[in-house]
Length: 405
Image (tube, rainbow, N blue to C red):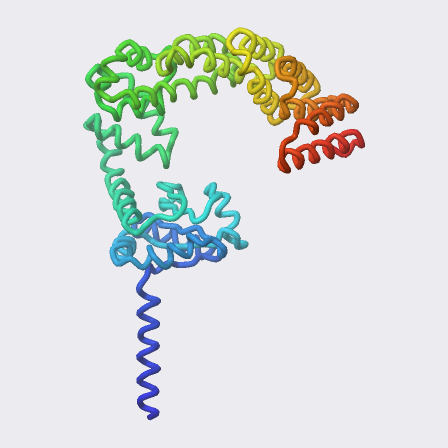
């Protein structure tokens, strides 16, 4: 009997060990010494470090443990090609490390170089097949990187190889990627523009509206659409628009702003969409730069010259919400009040207009008018939800009046 019990215990123990071993062999790092040892090993073995950043409460983290890290193909590939570690992002050790790598969602999966640079990253749950495929691609990129660097230095690199090198470096050495891309773009030929990879590269690295690539793509619009499709063309133009609008706002470049509204927007928007898009672009520019006189001119011009009477209430409301949330000042609240007043003259029985007018009047300290508009809204309220909203607005105005808001 004792022999049978011992055998049974041994069998159970063997099964438990087998079950525990049937997973990627992660090292759970808990201090700087263990961390340093991992990267010392990465240097000696010339391997990437695969890092699972988890928390105790993360359901998808547990799902990775149970469904993905137990997959035989994932185990085999990751054990062979990577050094595999984990750390708890909310531990004393893990919290500063998570901040170091910009981790804000869980799980986050990192592939780090031996110099502790992020080579690639994934956020959220990833099925076993997808993780295995991604791991294969990461390892392929890591293995070809030295060869591509050597070919570039020897000036024997092909155009496709240059595009791949830039793509790899964008996640690990963005400055170097930009330098290589800049040199590459100078020598583009018309045939290169027929390669979609080139268009993607330009959207990331060279999209100034006074640059040769933008002018070439714009002037050969039909060819670009025929070759790459309308969606790819529009995506490129959208990237040009977004990046240049940020530059215009940052440097106060009104010439660039005008170029965007007159040259870029018509390339990827229908004629019927242009008035609103041009207004939005200019209004955002002036508001972001704090040039509120010009902002108000744009708002009034668009409201009075481009909107039907039935559209003005919604426009006044959306503009007021934007001002309250992003550009709070008494000057701008008074402007919102004037906008809402115009809309109320058209639709005086609009519940939302009266409610927000009451709140806006409170923001500028006109509490008598605030309560008048809120009382008017109360007579227009329909249902418990609108009454609940009004109660919160009454309370907010009361707090403003008492200096508690």
